[in-house]
Length: 146
Image (cartoon, one colour):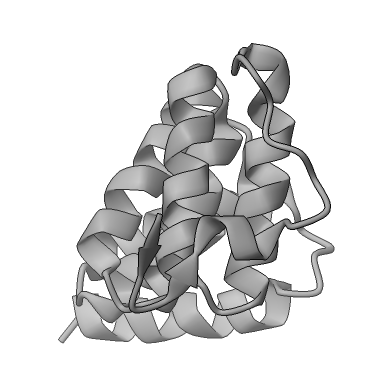
């Protein structure tokens, strides 16, 4: 499969394609998606994460990584939807709250952003991102109170 971004096959030339995809191949598609995203092949990354989701729709990680990829391409509404699906599958996935909070803030959804970012801090108070998140919460609160 090839498009303006290249081909999925180019991302992982050394990893053989599974003959019959199963849930056990979920990690393969996550790793492939991460590699493709790292190489700038966004379409192949999204396709790989989507395949991982089809193989294991109960896992939050396919949704989280696809959301993060959408977010990087300024497809924020899609990102927020996928972050929400990741959180539905794992309500303690702190990074999904943090990422959804920042994405919500960029969409001027300040109450949602503040809620997600505060919960992120509850889950990960010592995170390296905590200072940045606290600043975003202050800004969101200012917008809410205007």
